Length: 233
Image 1 (cartoon, one colour):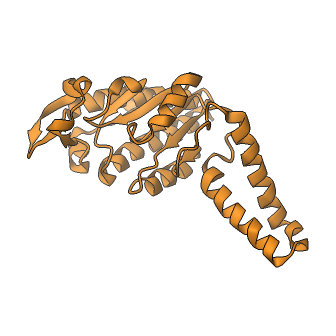
Image 2 (cartoon, rainbow, N blue to C red):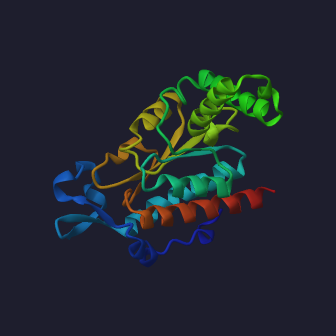
């Protein structure tokens, strides 16, 4: 995808609240270069720099998808997870929006077996195979299915480790980032003013708490993924 195909509007970013950081007392030293000022005791992020870093990330994602490789969306923040899940479903990528299960990357074989168990149990229920059990046993199966769905629905079609992960709030999902590092999975991440940007391979300085901010980032990312798939086909 060429530079001309990626349209990032700094004014739209500002309207979406992408530039609002945290209180000045929470500044991570390595985020100083991305700070443009202070407003009401809160750091503001330089959106020109955000646009530059976000463009790099989008180009990486575009090439990744065009090459047939995969990326997973991760966000377990309560106010944002539904938004991230919807975007992931819209562009057909795996997602984790509930608690990050330790070992999802580093012990993928075991996680895959649990996913297979979930899908098999789901199939048995759909085909009526569970009808032979008592009502109490069926109720237990239903409860197990509900738990498994919460844990594994977003990665049910992830048959191998992804090449990249997009973490919408690196501080909250630092365990995911650490596992990605261990497995050599590239990290695209939203980094607010209180986060070390070195954690991510493609760090996007942005407000990682606001629905408006994350929606803007998601909308641009989703469009790039969809366009890259269309170009590939």
